[in-house]
Image (cartoon, rainbow, N blue to C red; front, side, top):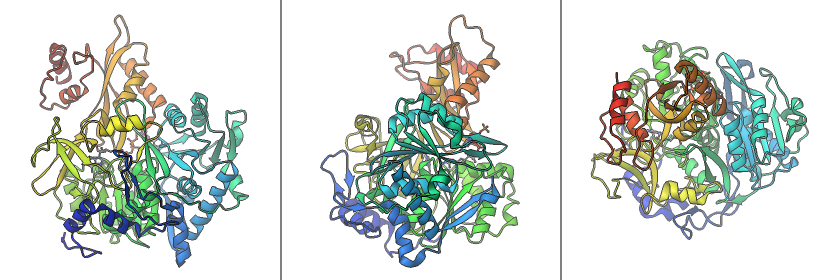
Length: 639
Ligand code: COA
Ligand code: AMP
């Protein structure tokens, strides 16, 4: 890859330095790419530090920036959203900017008519269909705050999010299509409403012809149910409502270390500025380019780069309902690239590993014309050097790892292809993105020398687009992210920075498990396992998995006298986790152990259990209560 500078003619080093040393100049400059109702005169508001706000006093509408302004500027006929369904190919269709604007405005009208006002929350529990993006943009249009819940979560997880967000309306569909089965959403929604202390007053259902169930089946529910198509047919379009840059655009729940998910709050102004800047400078994507993020709207990657980022940039976004393999084969990615002339694809390394497993010699690639593809971006978990090497070989294009989190909303570290492409070092997501001051600290808070592993932190303030807090829980925001090291945001990842300034992210240093790019908390799975009558206590840890990166594995101590067959126990626990958290937890391993290692204060040493199972070298924690437990476990789990 060459390392010349791109659009701006400025080097990465120069741009990065300006972002850190002159943040006002840098971010007010970036803000000029967004259209404001009232433009910002200041970038940063540090008056409530360590909580920061971006673009105080400015107003805008995110949906206007994503849709109306492109139509107004004469690009109404340009494709905005290509819905490509490998699960229901007949349903595939393309929306021009003008058509998408029409649908979104009318659904925004539906929400208004159903009583949704600016600042109200709307839960969106949808599969990968265009209506998911339409519902999100419709909320943004009227200043309502959406909270999308991933379709792979079951009723209890949905209910937890309903109770925390306090929505007035829930938007859903009759279901999702998974290979070999349909997932009916409506019984899960109804169960979630029953479990919820504060159910929404209205449920709106997009009925899909492939999946049974409709609003009419749920008379007598805690909410009033309506059919999407009926409501939208009569709706009057709603106009965009300007909101404060600092007002929330959405809440997205993510797993923390405890069972209770964290409601990450994203603002309107900082988000629009950061994503617009990222499309050009990180991804090198502009108006009319076809961009494809193969993820799900339920994850942050889907929010930022299926919906908002590409539309803010005036590009065409592919929304793909299907898998990389098995729908119907390992050529699915190459087929979509060739059908739509995709310029850049963004996916998770686990998806590439799935393709490689099914098609190790990449025979499928040769069947398609993928000449439009300029680069492949991956995130969600570390891109292991082996997968990097294979992908680079079969594609012969830049394969760019970049590191980010639900909390940051966009990349913390990347190889900025649109600014100045840099040589790739396998295993590294390259360098800090402008706006992010990344450091590695030891447990005592001292900066560590190059090459030494420690806690990766980001000096405050976080740049625009990053979370502005946790919904209804400012104390948890401070405790979880800001309390560990004064003046820094704790990422929860460990790693190091090398002598060239390249960052290497090695994995989570807390109890968050990353399964196939999906983030799960050990605590929430343990809470389900604890509900089994034979279980005294358990540790759930993320162990290494060749395909999914990690998989959750449960180590269970039985109650004294409990007489249960291990296979029966396993299938009961697997069913309980699937029922209460969802299939996406992919929980299949259960091992009965005589005891779990603990600290003297009773905390289970999950990390040590994981290291034993993964056969990693480990040091016996000085706080351990009883070292013989480790010897027994090692003998059992490593034999
Ligand atoms: N609704 C309902 N169920 C879902 C679901 C959804 N939206 N998504 C996944 N599931 C189910 C799957 O059907 C599977 O069920 P099963 O146990 O009955 O087989 C289970 O959850 C586990 O799913 P997953 O671990 O995702 O495996 P998979 O075989 O369905 O897909 C990948 C494998 C690699 C395609 C998929 O994990 C993937 O795309 N991961 C990337 C995630 C991502 O985009 N992260 C964001 C960063 S880019
Ligand atoms: P999520 O919030 O679901 O996006 O998950 C964020 C976590 O995924 C991070 O804290 C990392 O542990 C991991 N992650 C995401 N991208 C990368 C990457 N490129 N390299 C290493 N880890 C990553």
